[in-house]
Structures are given as C-alpha cells and as structure tokens.
Length: 305
Image (cartoon, rainbow, N blue to C red; front, side, top):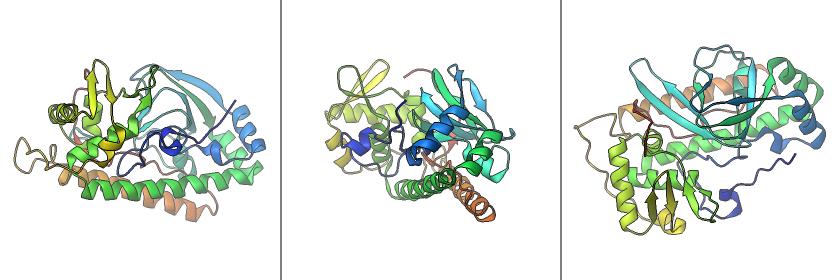
C-alpha cells in the first residue's frame, strides 16, 4: 500500500490555496509523517469500514473512541447549531485523517462527520491509538506536525475569510476541490449547495457567480460537474464587488458579519482547546480539525446542482 502526501496543489497542477479548504488528499495525513515501521503498525492495527452516502460517521456529543483515515470517497465535517445554522468547515478525501484530536483531549465530539458519497475509511480504536503512541515515539511526532500544519491552515483561512470578497472565495473553493477527470480536465464534483455552505452564501448567489465565471471563459458548467478551463486566470482574477444581500445585514448572505464570525470563533476555540490538550499531555498532539471554510449560514437543501 502506498501513502503519499502529494496532491494537485503540491505538484503544481493547481495554484496554491489561500483562504479555502485544502481538500486535496494527503495534506493532513498522519501516515505521511511516519517511518515505515510505525506506518505498517498503523495499517495492521486499523480495520476498514464503509459508509453509504449521507451516512453519519459520528455526531456532536458522541464519545470519542476512534480516529479515522479516509481511504476512498469524501467525508464532510460540519457544525450544526440549534438555530439551524450550519458551518461546513472541511471536505476530506483520501489520505486525510480526522477524529484524532478528541482521542488526545478525551472530550466528546464537538462536530459532525458525514459521508458525502460512498466512503471507505481506516478506523483506529482508542486502545490501538494509545498502544501505537507508547510503542512508536514517531507517532507523537507525526501528531505534532499535523497540529502545526493545521494551525497554519487556520491562519490562512482567517486571512481569506477576512479579506476576500465572495467571488474570490468561491474561485478558491473551486480550485481547492478540483480533481482531474477521465479526460484530464480539472473537474469540480461538489454540488452548488455544498459550495454555498462553504462560502456562506445562498445557492442562487453561487450559481449567479458561476454563470459570470462561465461568461469570462474561466469555467464550463455541466450536469454534475464544473470544469475549470483556466485555473491560472481563475486564481489571478481580481476580486469583484460583493453581490448585495437579499436583506440588509443578513448574516446568512453576508459571511463578513455575524454568521461567519460565529464560525471563526468556534474554530479558534477548537484550536485553543487542542493546544491545551497538547500542553497537558506533554508530547501528545492532535490534528486540529478546523481544516475548511470558516463560515456559517442557515441550513440549505443539499440536493441538486
């Protein structure tokens, strides 16, 4: 079995990410930092599990007794508030790990993990997790590197959420989620409703901006996919003036205000909590799960393009 931390962003096929979810697999892969003996020990200790589309892996308040590594498919991490607002802060793909910071802190889950499509994961129990840490010091070192990378990503998201206009944020999400298709084209297969949740806008507003991108020759909109025609131009295009909200001061349509700030506050709290766990447990490091779009908005239907 091969384990790689290479991704389209790292290999130069796509521009560097700024202010968006680094969805490409392997960027937050625990195994990428492990020497071969510890890597093999992880593979032997983990078992595989499959999830159907939209099936919950865990939800907020669940006991944390497992960590996961995505083998195939896409996993959606989000926070759903009692008032119906939802923050989608990460879409994970093959090679990405999640759930490990709760094993370090000993706290219950604070977010929801859901299979976006057909998903296969490697599952490491809490007992196996602790055994690996005792047997392989490199395992703790890998957790530390993941935490450092996650904090760097969080700072990048904060900058993007603060300074980038909505069209610029959407353009970056497209670049972050694009993958080569069978014809070698860069294709985005994330529904527009998901893109809307990631940038803190309505699906209608996202569709309007995508139509504008298409008119500029940057993308081609098709059934079930968005083809990026010119990734360099999409990354370099100047920010446009934000589309007016459906209602003045609307947090759901204006991620610069209340809803987005709520998401940022949650992410910052998660980072501080993970940091405190590391300090209490010496070299015990968890990967901060604030790895995606730090915005919040009213929950939307997630069907259709």
